[in-house]
Amino acid sequence: MNTTVKDWYIVAVMDGEQLVGEVLYGTIKEDATIRFYEGDYVTTSRIVSIDVKAQQIITASNSCYVLKGRGKRAVIDLDDFEMLRHGFSPEQIRALNSSSPLLAH
Image (cartoon, rainbow, N blue to C red; front, side, top):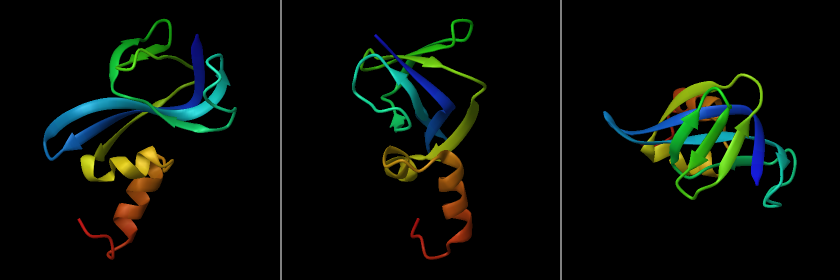
């Protein structure tokens, strides 16, 4: 049972200089597991394997995601992980962090 995502990112979550792990963030294209609706966003659990040739990612919760199209890589701070989980894309998080002096860090 696979979930297909588009407009995806492999997101490195950093705690200072330390890599906490990588997760997949993307938009649902199709979902055979019936967990998501088409057009929903998903932030996965930690990535445990990436098969570049097959365009597949396996996560720590043993979910399989099929990647459609070309994705991007992004880096976010551990402090911003909750925003990612709530649907903000890595680019939106970067914009919020750079434009708002009101955000406490």
